[in-house]
View 1 (cartoon, rainbow, N blue to C red):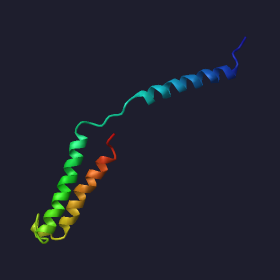
View 2: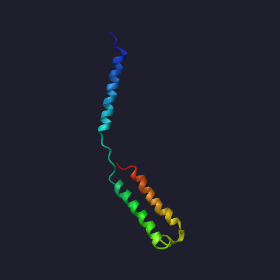
View 3: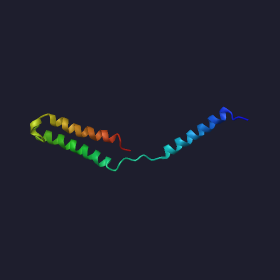
Length: 87
């Protein structure tokens, strides 16, 4: 007697549920370097911007002027992009 199609679908569905359960039980961890690099980028960006304001827009790189703000916010932006990958 041939197997019914319903039974075959039930077996495939149970197999798919087992695969989903195995994937859900895995703990996703961040690489060990991610958190220190993220915090370092936040701090470098913050310090860069503070130095820019305290020095009356003369430092950290005197030749680029107000672009120092963009550099500081660039470091902060990299920190935020790394923060999205942290688990």
